Image (cartoon, rainbow, N blue to C red; front, top):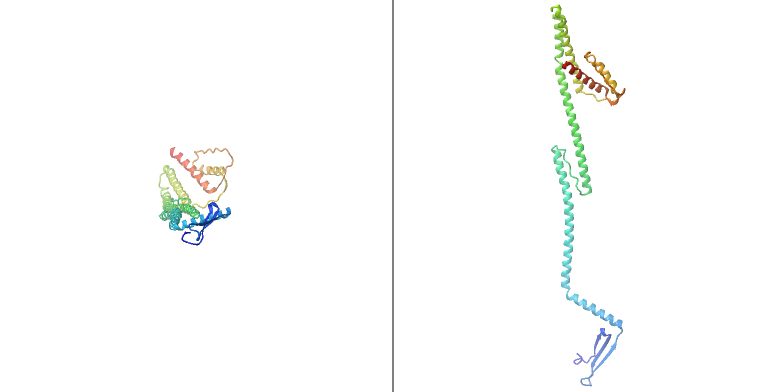
Length: 294
Protein backbone atom coordinates (compact mmCIF):
# COMPACT_ATOMS: atom_id res chain seq x y z
CA UNK A 1 0.00 0.00 0.00
CA UNK A 2 2.89 2.41 0.81
CA UNK A 3 4.64 1.67 -2.51
CA UNK A 4 1.61 2.76 -4.50
CA UNK A 5 0.61 5.72 -2.37
CA UNK A 6 2.64 8.70 -1.31
CA UNK A 7 0.50 9.31 1.75
CA UNK A 8 1.64 7.87 5.11
CA UNK A 9 -0.08 4.65 6.31
CA UNK A 10 -1.18 4.63 9.91
CA UNK A 11 -1.61 1.44 11.94
CA UNK A 12 -2.83 0.81 15.46
CA UNK A 13 -1.96 -2.27 17.51
CA UNK A 14 -4.11 -1.97 20.59
CA UNK A 15 -2.92 -5.28 22.02
CA UNK A 16 0.69 -3.93 22.12
CA UNK A 17 -0.40 -0.42 23.19
CA UNK A 18 1.22 1.19 20.21
CA UNK A 19 0.44 3.14 17.09
CA UNK A 20 2.69 3.43 14.07
CA UNK A 21 3.05 5.30 10.80
CA UNK A 22 5.06 4.38 7.70
CA UNK A 23 5.85 6.43 4.59
CA UNK A 24 8.01 5.85 1.49
CA UNK A 25 10.99 8.22 1.07
CA UNK A 26 10.85 9.50 -2.49
CA UNK A 27 14.45 10.62 -2.76
CA UNK A 28 15.78 7.38 -1.33
CA UNK A 29 15.15 4.29 -3.35
CA UNK A 30 13.83 1.39 -1.30
CA UNK A 31 13.91 3.47 1.91
CA UNK A 32 10.96 3.96 4.34
CA UNK A 33 10.39 5.97 7.47
CA UNK A 34 8.68 3.97 10.20
CA UNK A 35 7.65 5.75 13.42
CA UNK A 36 6.21 4.00 16.50
CA UNK A 37 4.43 5.68 19.39
CA UNK A 38 3.30 3.89 22.57
CA UNK A 39 -0.24 4.57 23.81
CA UNK A 40 -1.86 4.80 27.24
CA UNK A 41 -3.14 1.42 28.41
CA UNK A 42 -6.66 2.79 28.98
CA UNK A 43 -6.84 4.01 25.42
CA UNK A 44 -5.70 0.61 24.22
CA UNK A 45 -8.40 -1.04 26.33
CA UNK A 46 -11.07 1.25 24.89
CA UNK A 47 -9.83 0.46 21.41
CA UNK A 48 -9.92 -3.29 22.09
CA UNK A 49 -13.45 -3.05 23.46
CA UNK A 50 -14.53 -0.91 20.53
CA UNK A 51 -13.07 -3.43 18.12
CA UNK A 52 -14.82 -6.30 19.87
CA UNK A 53 -18.11 -4.39 19.78
CA UNK A 54 -17.60 -3.64 16.11
CA UNK A 55 -16.82 -7.26 15.38
CA UNK A 56 -19.92 -8.38 17.32
CA UNK A 57 -22.05 -5.90 15.39
CA UNK A 58 -20.84 -7.21 12.06
CA UNK A 59 -21.28 -10.78 13.25
CA UNK A 60 -24.85 -10.03 14.27
CA UNK A 61 -25.39 -8.16 11.02
CA UNK A 62 -24.23 -11.16 9.08
CA UNK A 63 -26.38 -13.54 11.10
CA UNK A 64 -29.51 -11.36 11.43
CA UNK A 65 -31.61 -13.67 9.27
CA UNK A 66 -30.79 -16.67 11.46
CA UNK A 67 -31.42 -14.64 14.61
CA UNK A 68 -34.78 -13.48 13.27
CA UNK A 69 -35.72 -17.06 12.46
CA UNK A 70 -34.62 -18.18 15.94
CA UNK A 71 -36.58 -15.34 17.54
CA UNK A 72 -39.69 -16.21 15.53
CA UNK A 73 -39.30 -19.88 16.46
CA UNK A 74 -38.91 -19.06 20.18
CA UNK A 75 -41.89 -16.71 19.97
CA UNK A 76 -44.04 -19.40 18.35
CA UNK A 77 -42.98 -21.98 20.95
CA UNK A 78 -43.83 -19.63 23.86
CA UNK A 79 -47.14 -18.58 22.30
CA UNK A 80 -48.06 -22.22 21.57
CA UNK A 81 -47.17 -23.23 25.13
CA UNK A 82 -49.27 -20.40 26.62
CA UNK A 83 -52.14 -21.26 24.28
CA UNK A 84 -51.97 -24.93 25.25
CA UNK A 85 -51.96 -24.11 28.96
CA UNK A 86 -54.87 -21.66 28.62
CA UNK A 87 -56.89 -24.15 26.53
CA UNK A 88 -56.21 -26.92 29.07
CA UNK A 89 -57.37 -24.72 31.94
CA UNK A 90 -60.44 -23.62 29.96
CA UNK A 91 -61.33 -27.23 29.06
CA UNK A 92 -60.87 -28.36 32.66
CA UNK A 93 -63.03 -25.52 34.00
CA UNK A 94 -65.67 -25.87 31.29
CA UNK A 95 -65.89 -29.66 31.76
CA UNK A 96 -66.64 -29.16 35.46
CA UNK A 97 -69.07 -26.37 34.68
CA UNK A 98 -70.94 -28.28 31.97
CA UNK A 99 -70.91 -31.46 34.05
CA UNK A 100 -72.65 -29.51 36.83
CA UNK A 101 -75.17 -28.10 34.32
CA UNK A 102 -75.74 -31.61 32.92
CA UNK A 103 -76.34 -32.98 36.44
CA UNK A 104 -78.90 -30.23 37.06
CA UNK A 105 -80.65 -31.02 33.76
CA UNK A 106 -80.81 -34.76 34.60
CA UNK A 107 -82.13 -34.02 38.10
CA UNK A 108 -84.75 -31.61 36.73
CA UNK A 109 -85.89 -34.24 34.21
CA UNK A 110 -86.27 -36.87 36.95
CA UNK A 111 -88.19 -34.45 39.17
CA UNK A 112 -90.49 -33.73 36.23
CA UNK A 113 -91.18 -37.50 36.03
CA UNK A 114 -92.03 -37.57 39.76
CA UNK A 115 -88.79 -39.10 41.01
CA UNK A 116 -87.87 -37.11 44.14
CA UNK A 117 -85.19 -39.59 45.30
CA UNK A 118 -82.71 -38.07 42.83
CA UNK A 119 -79.78 -36.00 44.13
CA UNK A 120 -77.42 -33.65 42.32
CA UNK A 121 -73.79 -34.81 42.90
CA UNK A 122 -71.94 -32.07 44.79
CA UNK A 123 -68.69 -32.04 42.81
CA UNK A 124 -65.83 -29.55 43.07
CA UNK A 125 -66.53 -26.74 40.66
CA UNK A 126 -67.15 -23.01 40.61
CA UNK A 127 -68.24 -21.71 44.02
CA UNK A 128 -71.53 -20.36 42.69
CA UNK A 129 -72.28 -23.71 41.01
CA UNK A 130 -71.58 -25.56 44.26
CA UNK A 131 -74.04 -23.29 46.09
CA UNK A 132 -76.58 -23.84 43.29
CA UNK A 133 -76.21 -27.64 43.58
CA UNK A 134 -76.67 -27.50 47.37
CA UNK A 135 -79.75 -25.27 47.07
CA UNK A 136 -81.18 -27.58 44.38
CA UNK A 137 -80.79 -30.60 46.70
CA UNK A 138 -82.46 -28.67 49.54
CA UNK A 139 -85.33 -27.85 47.20
CA UNK A 140 -85.69 -31.56 46.31
CA UNK A 141 -85.82 -32.46 50.02
CA UNK A 142 -88.53 -29.84 50.62
CA UNK A 143 -90.54 -31.09 47.62
CA UNK A 144 -90.26 -34.66 48.86
CA UNK A 145 -91.40 -33.63 52.35
CA UNK A 146 -94.35 -31.69 50.93
CA UNK A 147 -95.25 -34.61 48.65
CA UNK A 148 -95.26 -37.01 51.62
CA UNK A 149 -97.49 -34.62 53.57
CA UNK A 150 -99.87 -34.35 50.63
CA UNK A 151 -100.02 -38.12 50.25
CA UNK A 152 -100.75 -38.55 53.97
CA UNK A 153 -103.40 -35.83 53.80
CA UNK A 154 -105.01 -37.45 50.74
CA UNK A 155 -105.04 -40.83 52.46
CA UNK A 156 -106.62 -39.33 55.57
CA UNK A 157 -109.26 -37.60 53.49
CA UNK A 158 -109.97 -40.80 51.55
CA UNK A 159 -110.19 -42.76 54.81
CA UNK A 160 -112.53 -40.18 56.35
CA UNK A 161 -114.82 -40.25 53.31
CA UNK A 162 -114.85 -44.05 53.26
CA UNK A 163 -115.45 -44.28 57.00
CA UNK A 164 -118.32 -41.78 56.90
CA UNK A 165 -119.97 -43.59 53.97
CA UNK A 166 -119.47 -46.98 55.61
CA UNK A 167 -120.84 -45.74 58.94
CA UNK A 168 -123.82 -44.25 57.17
CA UNK A 169 -124.54 -47.47 55.27
CA UNK A 170 -124.27 -49.59 58.43
CA UNK A 171 -126.33 -47.18 60.54
CA UNK A 172 -129.23 -46.95 58.05
CA UNK A 173 -130.73 -50.43 58.66
CA UNK A 174 -130.36 -50.25 62.47
CA UNK A 175 -133.44 -48.04 62.96
CA UNK A 176 -135.88 -50.31 61.03
CA UNK A 177 -134.42 -53.33 62.81
CA UNK A 178 -135.08 -51.68 66.18
CA UNK A 179 -138.61 -50.74 65.10
CA UNK A 180 -139.23 -54.31 63.96
CA UNK A 181 -138.10 -55.66 67.35
CA UNK A 182 -140.45 -53.23 69.12
CA UNK A 183 -143.31 -54.44 66.89
CA UNK A 184 -142.49 -58.07 67.61
CA UNK A 185 -142.40 -57.37 71.31
CA UNK A 186 -145.76 -55.57 71.33
CA UNK A 187 -147.36 -58.11 68.95
CA UNK A 188 -146.24 -61.42 70.43
CA UNK A 189 -145.63 -60.65 74.09
CA UNK A 190 -149.26 -61.46 74.95
CA UNK A 191 -149.49 -64.46 72.61
CA UNK A 192 -146.48 -66.32 73.91
CA UNK A 193 -146.92 -68.82 76.71
CA UNK A 194 -146.11 -67.65 80.21
CA UNK A 195 -143.09 -69.93 80.64
CA UNK A 196 -141.58 -68.63 77.35
CA UNK A 197 -142.12 -64.90 77.97
CA UNK A 198 -138.96 -64.58 80.00
CA UNK A 199 -136.79 -66.15 77.25
CA UNK A 200 -138.58 -64.07 74.61
CA UNK A 201 -137.93 -60.81 76.52
CA UNK A 202 -134.30 -61.77 77.16
CA UNK A 203 -133.77 -62.57 73.48
CA UNK A 204 -135.27 -59.27 72.40
CA UNK A 205 -133.17 -57.47 75.05
CA UNK A 206 -129.97 -59.13 73.79
CA UNK A 207 -130.82 -58.19 70.20
CA UNK A 208 -131.51 -54.59 71.34
CA UNK A 209 -128.21 -54.45 73.22
CA UNK A 210 -126.35 -55.77 70.19
CA UNK A 211 -128.02 -53.17 67.98
CA UNK A 212 -127.03 -50.50 70.51
CA UNK A 213 -123.44 -51.77 70.53
CA UNK A 214 -123.36 -51.75 66.72
CA UNK A 215 -124.71 -48.22 66.75
CA UNK A 216 -122.11 -47.13 69.30
CA UNK A 217 -119.40 -48.86 67.29
CA UNK A 218 -120.52 -47.10 64.12
CA UNK A 219 -120.62 -43.76 65.94
CA UNK A 220 -117.09 -44.31 67.26
CA UNK A 221 -115.95 -45.37 63.80
CA UNK A 222 -117.46 -42.23 62.30
CA UNK A 223 -115.93 -40.08 65.05
CA UNK A 224 -112.55 -41.66 64.45
CA UNK A 225 -112.82 -40.90 60.74
CA UNK A 226 -113.20 -37.21 61.41
CA UNK A 227 -110.67 -37.02 64.19
CA UNK A 228 -110.64 -33.50 65.65
CA UNK A 229 -107.37 -31.70 66.16
CA UNK A 230 -105.90 -32.81 69.48
CA UNK A 231 -106.10 -30.42 72.42
CA UNK A 232 -102.75 -31.01 74.11
CA UNK A 233 -102.27 -30.54 77.84
CA UNK A 234 -100.78 -32.47 80.76
CA UNK A 235 -103.11 -35.41 81.57
CA UNK A 236 -102.76 -37.96 84.36
CA UNK A 237 -102.75 -41.37 82.64
CA UNK A 238 -103.56 -43.13 85.92
CA UNK A 239 -106.83 -41.20 86.32
CA UNK A 240 -107.80 -41.79 82.67
CA UNK A 241 -107.28 -45.55 82.97
CA UNK A 242 -109.18 -45.74 86.28
CA UNK A 243 -112.17 -43.88 84.79
CA UNK A 244 -112.30 -46.24 81.82
CA UNK A 245 -112.05 -49.30 84.06
CA UNK A 246 -115.18 -48.08 85.88
CA UNK A 247 -117.01 -47.63 82.56
CA UNK A 248 -116.08 -51.08 81.25
CA UNK A 249 -117.10 -52.70 84.56
CA UNK A 250 -120.69 -52.40 83.43
CA UNK A 251 -120.06 -54.55 80.33
CA UNK A 252 -119.41 -57.70 82.35
CA UNK A 253 -119.59 -57.68 86.14
CA UNK A 254 -118.03 -61.16 86.32
CA UNK A 255 -114.72 -59.97 84.88
CA UNK A 256 -112.50 -58.22 87.43
CA UNK A 257 -109.87 -55.79 86.21
CA UNK A 258 -106.92 -55.37 88.56
CA UNK A 259 -104.99 -52.18 87.86
CA UNK A 260 -101.41 -52.36 89.19
CA UNK A 261 -99.54 -49.08 89.35
CA UNK A 262 -96.20 -47.94 90.74
CA UNK A 263 -96.99 -44.22 90.75
CA UNK A 264 -100.15 -42.34 91.65
CA UNK A 265 -99.56 -39.90 88.82
CA UNK A 266 -98.05 -40.21 85.33
CA UNK A 267 -98.34 -36.97 83.36
CA UNK A 268 -98.30 -36.94 79.57
CA UNK A 269 -98.80 -34.01 77.21
CA UNK A 270 -101.77 -35.37 75.23
CA UNK A 271 -105.45 -35.12 74.25
CA UNK A 272 -107.54 -36.62 77.08
CA UNK A 273 -110.56 -37.60 74.92
CA UNK A 274 -108.51 -39.42 72.29
CA UNK A 275 -106.42 -41.24 74.91
CA UNK A 276 -109.58 -42.15 76.84
CA UNK A 277 -111.03 -43.63 73.64
CA UNK A 278 -107.85 -45.69 73.16
CA UNK A 279 -107.97 -47.10 76.71
CA UNK A 280 -111.70 -47.81 76.48
CA UNK A 281 -111.29 -49.72 73.20
CA UNK A 282 -108.40 -51.76 74.61
CA UNK A 283 -110.39 -52.70 77.71
CA UNK A 284 -113.50 -53.57 75.68
CA UNK A 285 -111.43 -55.73 73.34
CA UNK A 286 -109.92 -57.55 76.34
CA UNK A 287 -113.35 -58.15 77.90
CA UNK A 288 -114.84 -59.34 74.62
CA UNK A 289 -111.88 -61.67 74.11
CA UNK A 290 -112.40 -63.20 77.55
CA UNK A 291 -116.12 -63.57 76.87
CA UNK A 292 -115.45 -65.37 73.58
CA UNK A 293 -113.00 -67.79 75.21
CA UNK A 294 -115.45 -68.45 78.05
